[in-house]
Amino acid sequence: MSLQRSLSRPSLMFLALLCGAAMPFAFAPYHHIWLAILSLAGLIWLIQSKYPFNTGYSFGFGWFGFGAWWLAPTVHDYGGLPWAVAIVVPILMGLIMGLFPAIWAWSCIKISRFNGKPYALLLLLPCSAIIMEWLRGHIFTGLPWTTLGNLVLDSPASTWLSVFGAYGMAFLPVLLAASLTLLCQKDLQKEQRQFASLAIIACVAFMFFTPAIAHLETPESRVALIQPNIPQDQKWDRQFLQQSMQHLLELSEKEASNVDIIIWPEAAIPFYLERNPNWSRWLQEQMNRWEKPILFGGLKLFSDTGASQNGLYLFEPHNAETTPNAKPDSKPDSKQFAGKHHLVPFGEYIPSWLPWLRKIGPDIADFQAASDKGILATGTTQFGSLICYESLFPEQARQRVQAGANVLVVVTNDAWYGHSPAAWQHFQASQARAVETGRYVLRAGNTGVSAIIAPDGRITSTTPWWTSAVVTGTYHTSSMMTFYQTWGNNPAFILFGILLIWLLLFRKRSDCI
Image (cartoon, rainbow, N blue to C red):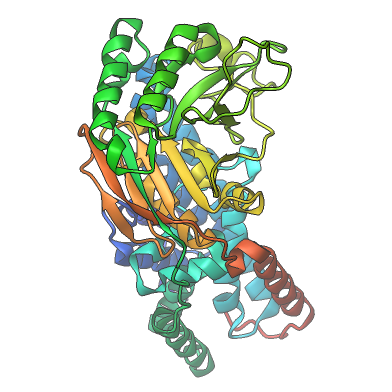
């Protein structure tokens, strides 16, 4: 009997829990990718026991439960939940999200044992990891936080994201971990070791033979990303409104003459412009004086329905066309608005099937998801708008590019996360979106991380976290279409379907694994 099969169920679950709890340290800001390989290898060794579901579930609880500890102070401080309830939130996160690794581990073991061929488990684990990652990015509105594919951003294989995307690239760390695990097991047959050795060679090849990102030859533009570092407890306080707006103005004033566009972070304007015409007029005056367009996060109220949206405004100086049906003596409206499409459940809205949560968390917002194209245009530049949370989702960025975006803009307010690793894990998602779409990403955050990200994922300009500063630099528009942008996740799904059919139909009678 193998060692893992001789361990008791509690021992297996405890070891898997430790492996899962180590996973968050593989992502930003720690970047210990080797730790992810070891953790995944430990999981793959453990699930070959009598309890693959239990060990997979313990691993998932450690990964998503311990890894999301920062949710407790966030929902307490800013969501209005009492500590007794807030502490339960990351536990619930682990309990729910742990189901994905549990089902993944159990199904891989069952199918590989049913098939009986020496390569079955080695192929199933990385291919089905793609499906697992896609599912957790969609089920229950989706939460692809610390996606496995983001790990490759810290490796030479990062540009493969332009081919397979973040979900698809989950196969690489899992393939490497699986091949190392199987290669080191003493009870494997010679044929199985050969397959594991070939898999390691394939992983090394992926590191060295990477696709190139096309060099952009479009005209260069300059941008100023404003990071005001306004404390979260002041941001929505009317007593500090004048001070906050003046601070944004002063930071922008210094760079206005040297750049082509200015970008303020999410909810930089913490009120409805429709209800505050004086502030709206004041903002337009600044744009006219600087003679530069400005993108800024703000809230929009729709008077006809009473619905509100969180989103991104574009103000342009002088040259806006008069809105249809405007009065002859009215001034032209130079504002464009793109709303947030993918809202944060329990943060920006309460699902209709859980209305009782309104009593526990009365401070939870009630926004409406946008149905626009998410594009703000000025001149020949089409800015694709990604508001905070929705930058986690590859589909959102793909939709903006399909709608014509030649630059992506991410505005966020990561002050919600405090000084926890969450802000850096969120930032990694923006890097992945840049490589997947072949677009520059201009990311402006209230407290950071603010940066200009090149289409190959490189950070070309940034500023320290939790400081009041301005990030300036250059970017290019792009009309290129990466393989992932064109085909999305479809090739990965097709290959997995073919593999699954093959393993189920062509099985070996003897149990090799």
